[in-house]
Image 1: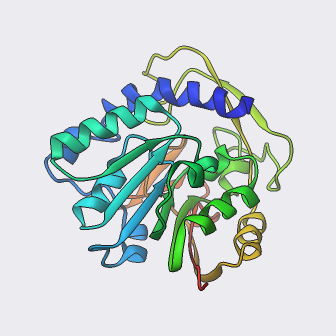
Image 2: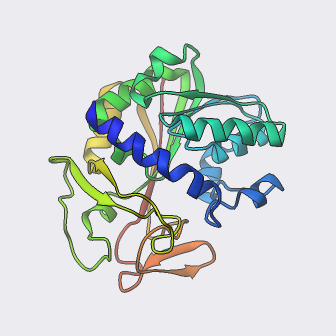
Length: 265
């Protein structure tokens, strides 16, 4: 699919910039810094000896954090550049993890194991054209009794223009959103990148939840948050430690949501 090739090019460009950025702070991570956020840590609980699949893992920081917590982890991402960096990090940390390069929608063809937990967080679903296809992957990869943990930016965020001055896009999925960029969220002004295209889709909460229910998963948790744990948007300020809100919209819009869904079969 053209969109995946277009987006793969964009993410291949991002990897080295992200790896060297203060945003990801790889030196701190190598020294033991915890990069998982309180939202997902609370949902994960004790993961010691549990098998865990991390979908759209980028260059593996969260995946390796989960391994440091004792999980038996596998990460998948469509960028070979990212997967190469993930393997470098795993080697430097001397942490056991498996990393697979491939389209997330083809995960069942690339990984035969079933998992206790499927984990995916922050800025992942918008790169996928269809939530039904994604939900089928989640269902297929879970053991009986296994659970999905999803923490994602709220679709209300993706309705807004880049400066959060007004609504530019529909809350509901429509035609693909095609944008031309030359910056990335780790540094939206100083970073120098070649111009590239991104193709994304907005997915309403209804679309996400309905897709999970349709494949037979049982929703066990859902919550919305008025902040982002990452300062990855324009016109943003820290209102509490490690909690960021849009200036002028503080406590007025949801910025993140979390859910868990169990595979009871």
